[in-house]
Length: 327
Image 1 (tube, rainbow, N blue to C red):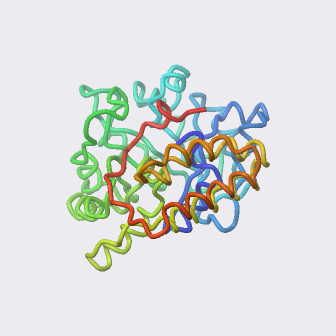
Image 2 (spheres, rainbow, N blue to C red):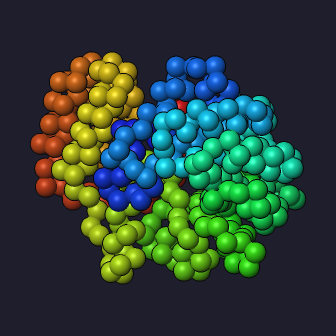
């Protein structure tokens, strides 16, 4: 969720029912170098809690030092990303790159656990490729060095985001009698019905949602409502979509300033307002807005043009943000 899960986005998700949110992942080496972009990602706010700060890296000393830096900002937990499949991260021996060397993965996790008083969690994948889906062994070994919870994406690194997430192995990890830490499943959850079905079938302690929340933070409240009542909520109205757009816009400008904040929002408008017929003209106005006032006026026009329009419920597109929307 690089370039996605910043404070304005997290605030929107929290407002729509997310129980726990994470920062964008942060380079351990960047934190140590005091890189401005990395330090900025440490910004967390009380209304987000519980919130975890996620770091990545391939060197034990660097990860341990980064854990100490993170602790000073007082998040609720520290998460290590051993799952990012992007070539630039993997090539540095970080993210899913550590899946090639499980011993090193365990050493990295242990170094973080020893370096901080925070609960340390891990996000990872089933394995490097189809021939090395060793998540059951990995889960036991990470638990043994002290991690507090494990989130598993049901794909290998070789799959990237292609194909279908395999939850069978996630279920095997959860139902391993040796495992006592919480296990969270991740991958392809794009509806309340699927969330409830997978939670029941595989017994996971919780579900992590990433791409399905991009442009559709309502998925959190919809899942919660469906679990309690068994009934789906109606799709958000145009008024609700515009209101969340405004909330995200105000948060983005407040956190990044009027120039960078407006630029950041360009990639979000279409996600929030997709499904509206003839939206291209309004999208152009929003993307070209040079001031906060112009963006607000463009959103007013959207709301007026589609007032009362019933937005059809369409399948949530699980986009690969790195490929389609990275900046």
